[in-house]
Amino acid sequence: MTALTGRVIAAFSRRFIVETATGELPCQVKGRHLRVVCGDQVEIRQDGDAGVIEAVLPRTSLLYRSDAFKSKAIAANVTQLAVVVAARPSFSMELVQRCVLAAEDQDIISLIILNKTDLPETPPALDRLGLLTRIGYPLLTLSALTDVEPLRPALHGHTTLLIGQSGMGKSTLINAMFPLAGVRTAEYSEALDSGRHTTTHTRLHRLDAESSVIDSPGLQEFALQHMDGHALANAFIDFRPYLGHCRFRDCKHETEPGCRLHEAVAAGEVDASRLKLFQILRRLQQNAAQRL
Ligand SMILES: Nc1nc2c(ncn2[C@@H]2O[C@H](COP(=O)(O)OP(=O)(O)O)[C@@H](O)[C@H]2O)c(=O)[nH]1
Ligand SMILES: [Mg+2]
Ligand SMILES: [Zn+2]
Image: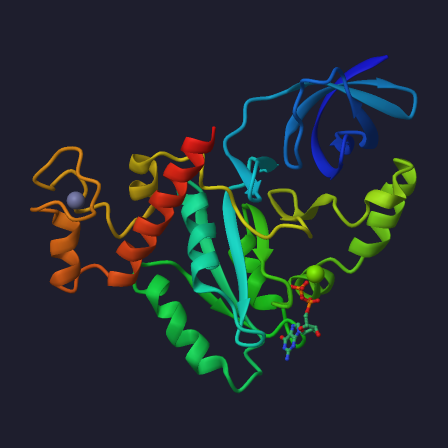
């Protein structure tokens, strides 16, 4: 038995692959209460050609996936979120913004990738993304079918979580950047004897010693319900210069007089659709809190 530390590079339900200094090891988790996700730094005890995860080291960030009823942690220690969109099929600007908000809440930087630039509908898609690029979010344009090289410099030095609605070209990007991704996944699911989990796993692909990409095929939506109204407003980085300057300290930025955010919208300093999204999300959050 040997004690080791390593990083979780594949998560299949309750089974994991951990990368250590000496190689990759299939692992299970000790006990029912230890929560382990892809990207975690862990302490393991190796026994032959398998291991047991005994502890999770402190995380710098943790992102949650959500559905109607619960949220579930999906990736730890992510430093950058990359949201993939494309002109066809059309993408939801609300979903892109929700992703970026979840990242802001964890102090993670965001990158928007407009894929399929070979499509003629690309210019209107670029226009729609202006809502976020005007605020300062970086945008990278590429065609994954032709050339993924423009993406590499943006990934350097980061653990990037790659997400996107289905059809945007996420798998095409992953396969172009990591040609062995499919083979490794098959190997892992054999090592873990969990073939039936291959479609719901999360993977960390290494680009180089300092850079990696986490891919989670099922990822549709991030959880925002765990954020309170204050955290939510702060996640809108374009609101930050105005927060704390409303007439009422506890302003909900709804219909209160002297709301500095409403003034900023009226003056054209903040986009009206951003304030509207904030109000929608805050109400969802309140409803979720009432259900608990
Ligand atoms: N025209 C064009 N099609 C692309 C590009 N990248 C991916 N696709 C196509 O978009 C479709 C969805 O791609 P896929 O990678 O499966 O998307 P995912 O659902 O996000 O994983 C496939 O038919 C791809 O061939 C691109 O750069 N240009
Ligand atoms: Mg896919
Ligand atoms: Zn206000």
